[in-house]
Picture (cartoon, rainbow, N blue to C red):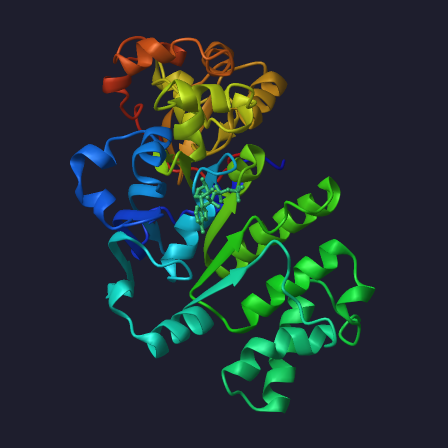
Length: 389
Ligand SMILES: Nc1ncnc2c1ncn2[C@@H]1O[C@H](COP(=O)(O)OP(=O)(O)OP(=O)(O)O)[C@@H](O)[C@H]1O
């Protein structure tokens, strides 16, 4: 079954080392922008007051985060919240006003021009919304373009480009020009061009927002597949919550230049940081995002821990509902053959209905009836060769 957060759960890369480290980053547009970050009075003003007082717009305000190796890091927010500015600051396509940025520990703000060029060409390739394809070149030559800039020889780069064209599903279209392609196919060319240089990080700036919904879904699945197969680190900008939940291992939700919450899809949907985030995620189908861990309780007995269907701890509540409904009994949550607990219909429904969230936050009665602070592994059962759902 396909679920909205299957990337996060399938890749298991949440604990990787940082690729990008961002600390106290500011980007202020306008006159004497540099004085804003260091001035406590100015930096505390809301956007309208700052604009009225100084004529400046703080597009990114004191933002800190790490992008871990192998994760899809989504930057989400409404139009004007600062997403593009933030991601362009990572490779200094926009020059930051204050703060620190490092890639693999190297100070990006200290890089000279040639180092920056190398960063953008080899290490952090960008895929744009408007493709940026060269109209008179064929698909193959568009894809080979980045390699040409790197100085790779003609036959070698064409060979490499052909491989990547096939990888993104454009085999047979190598000799077409961009005008002879659909929007989705053009975006695949853009993706292939970024992939051809084998960058450490792919940066996507709303790459699919101009595509119609079906093609958009295809492209999202392409990203999920690439991520699964290659474990490539990706930073993905979107204003679409469904897209963020589907693709993101972690999501940074921006508002007025600040990151208001940074967390996994489950953390954002299950424990919104404030009313703004709560309103943002209100209509999300919780059963497709929340995992079995949230609904689980310790087994009441060794007998209960030994019966019922098996589910993975990172299976969605929706998957577990199906397993429990089919079996007509509680399900065991198995991790590497070890029973972590059980889920029953009451616990699963409580998560869907968001009942007990306040009590859970207070460490009281959670879904499934287990105090959150005391959620411990259930009695251990012998290793089994069963494949959990
Ligand atoms: N060059 C600029 N000069 C002045 N203000 C700018 C400039 N670029 C962006 N801004 C402002 O900075 C804020 C953040 O813009 P940004 O483009 O980063 O937002 P976004 O979240 O990417 O929006 P969208 O989803 O519409 O692309 C906005 O208020 C925007 O008007």
